[in-house]
Image (cartoon, rainbow, N blue to C red; front, side):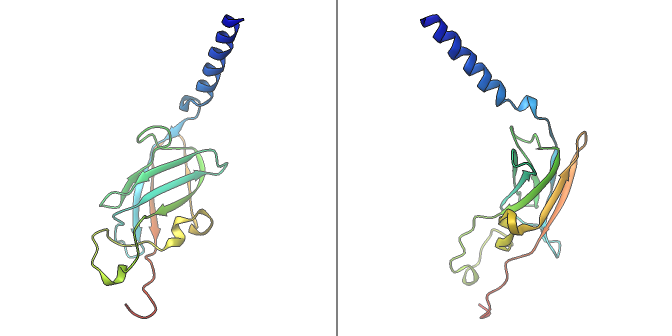
Length: 146
């Protein structure tokens, strides 16, 4: 009975581990740049690509020059092939932002941080390097001119 439990447990562990393996889902290199409409590079934030079926999300940190490289299962492996919705996320405290100088570079309009409002869509193609330019708009200045 005890050996049967061990065998069952071992089989369950092997099944779970193999089902979660990234080896069964190929990824393709994805890189690019994030800029404002005027060409100014975004300096901070994260880019996320969500596969059309919702099963996989790839993420990449935006560098000071606006560049990014996506990772799904391991660092720099890219994204799964197919259509993806994308977002650009910045976690910047905006309290009194217009009143103080800051070094994080341009601030993105918050609509780009939500899949349902970003309007960003890209197709990752297999067997090639996928390089994308993501263009976003800056946060609107306050109505009172501060």
